[in-house]
Image (cartoon, rainbow over all chains, first blue to last red; front, side, top):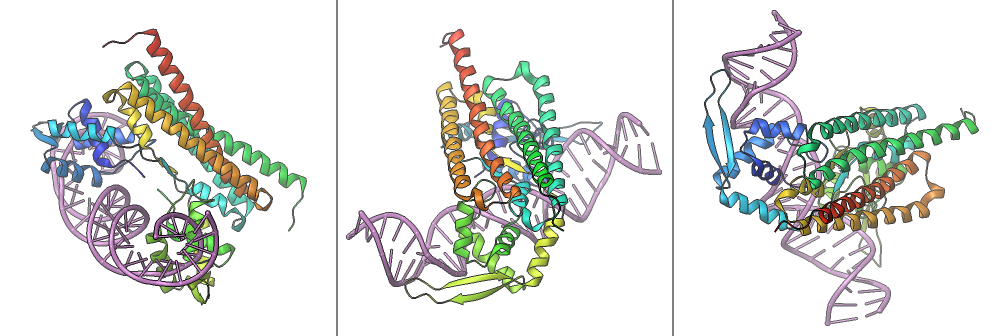
Length: 182
Length: 182
DNA sequence: GGCTACATGTAATGCGTTACATGATTTC
DNA sequence: GAAATCATGTAACGCATTACATGTAGCC
């Protein structure tokens, strides 16, 4: 099960008031590793939370840019977020198309399987390095717990690369040891 | 993005005919690490695939148990699954309530944060050991790619434990070095 | 007597995505 | 002149979950 957008939004607004646009930007940066949500999710969530009285809206007029709506937590919103923090921890979940394909690898040819693995390595390497960049940028301003959440992300992506590389090695030596069967 | 239940079902039926109940069992075992789906998802998916002609149903009468519907791939179902295997690899995704909470750790007290981490360690350790059990049980019968998908799961859970333990250590030494502020 | 395993399904509901719709300003 | 950034939103649709509904057989 996964944390709902609602609580992530409340959490972000616990730090400081923000607009929907800014919230979405956060999802693309710092958060990208463990959460994501689109505009089609962010704006309706904000409207709903406002209607329910958990956040309040202020429209900020800007001359050179479109106006923006800045939302801030109300006391009841703060309470709601605190009750979330006291609720039982949900299980983490992974959806991995790569693992699923590997599981059914026997139905694809070897070249394809190798391509999947190589693509996986490239992607996880990229993400790991992006996250390392974020760490460098924010390390002074992060709490211990925050730093740990980032570290989990970095290690996750880095370790997957290691596992994938080892797997690739093994496959290659295995194929070399018994020449083509075609 | 995540692989749809539809393709996972087709993949399982590529090996051998199965009933909805058996498919769901697979999701709880071998697959649990990278995919899950409930009965409320499995049965409608099977019905839809049958209506579309991708699988065919045979009712098997059983005397000591309820009858069951065994589904097998039709040629067009086989084609559909193959076209999935040729389609571009989707990005893996994680939803982690633990990471999200850690990110907002400053709004909870230290004891709570420690409990989250300890719960995380326990859960990931359990899952890792379950997966190791599965590996022992099936290692002779698994393809290289299949073994790799399982290894990814094992390493993932094991490595998270390592990261969490290190984080916990660091937090503890940090707190010890600067006594309570209350 | 109660729990677990076997076995299938539906309905209400939640939650999210994609695509659409709009539009100004700045930068290349 | 094109593309990116800022900025907000809706509608259609997909996909999944939870809870409900039903029933037998075997084991402790």
